Length: 152
Image 1: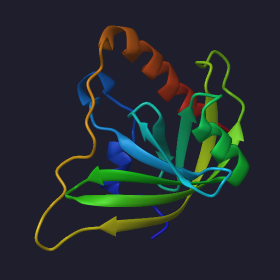
Image 2: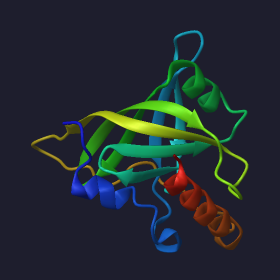
Image 3: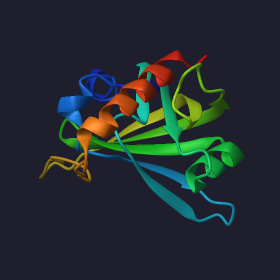
Image 4: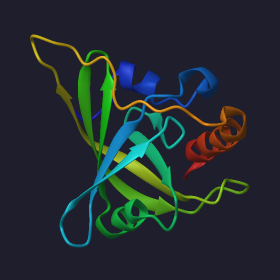
């Protein structure tokens, strides 16, 4: 499968952040020494612009950003629709759109989508988080989502 399902498109649409925040997604990269490197992303850091493209943003000086720049590869793991979904992405850094928050932006092309589902159980959620000050965070997140949708 090389395209996102309808459920994944809804999960990654970046809409209604005020009511949907709280469940993170795991982004895996490989560091310069060949070791796996994990990062938890919010709903405002991974946005699908269509069924074949997932744009990402992260802190520009982070290990995750360095790994994405070096390898151009990432795996995004999402709990959705009773399963774990593994999205393999080819990424390329793109300039931040005008007025966007000061982050590193990457355009991700979906290489593969794998569903991991057990016959005897369903996945009900991924790692959870709670914002300390949603009123301070949500406006920045809205700006990030807008920027991710505008990446060329």
